[in-house]
Image: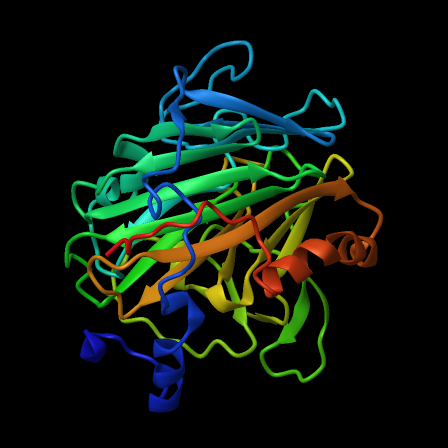
Length: 347
C-alpha cells in the first residue's frame, strides 16, 4: 500500500512509518481487551458526573425524554455537556459533541457511506461509574471495527480514547480518514483559538481563527505537517482538505461558550488536524472539529488515538493555557487512563 500513499518526500514517509501511532498501542478499550468486564446499557445513553461536569454519552439512536429532548438519531458521543449546575447544554441539543462522524479514504462516495458511523449499529458499554464505551462492529462498507471510550476524570475533564481495527482492505488510497464533530450551541463567538502562526510567518502567537463559510479555510495543520493525501477532485466533504493559512504549534485549541472555555487537547503523536465550520450545527451553531489520518494501514492491526475535552471558566487565552497545562502534559507524555492489560495481540 505504500505506493498509494502520497506524502511530500521520502524522509517524511519513513518517519511516519516508524511513528508511535503506527505501533501496536497499549490496550485501553474492550476492542483491544475483550476480556475486560462491562455491561451493555439498557438505555441509549448513560449520564456521567464528576467534579462540576455532567456529560451524557449516547449511542447513535434517537432519544426524546427529559434528559435528552429531541436528540436526533445518528449523532453519537456527548449528547449533553453542562458545568456547574447550569441548565444550558453547551452542545446543540439535537446533535452532539465528540461525535464520530466520517470514515473515508479520499474517494467520492454516497453520503450514507461517508457518514457510516451514524448508521451502523452502536453498542453502549458501561465499564464503571465514570467510564463508558461505544462499540461499533465492522461497518458494512468500510469494514472498520471500533470502540470509543469516554472516561470522566476527577476534575470533570473527558478523556476520549478511540481504537479501531480495519478488518478488510477497503480503503483504496491506502489511508484511513476519520473525523469527529462537536456542534456548539449558540456561542457568542464562532472562533476557535490556538497557538500558531500564518504559513509565511516565523513567530508564533495566539490565533483567533474563523471560517467565512462552511468548507472555506476550514482545516489547520501542525507547523511540521507536510503530509499530502491522495483524493478525488470531487470529494464532497469540504471540511477535510480545505486548509487555512494558519499552522498550529501545539495540539490544542479552545472556543468560548457561556463564559466557559471548551478546551480540545490531543497527543502530539496522533498528528491531529483541527477543523471548523461557522454553521455546521445550523445558523449560529459552529462545528469545532478534528480529524485523524491513519497512513499505510494494515488489515487486522489496531490503531489508537487519545484526546481530552476540558470545560473551564474563561478569563483569557493565557488562563486557559495554564488551566489545561496538566492535561496537555499528560497527553504529551502519554500518561493517560489505561485499560486493563491484555495477554493477546488484537491482530
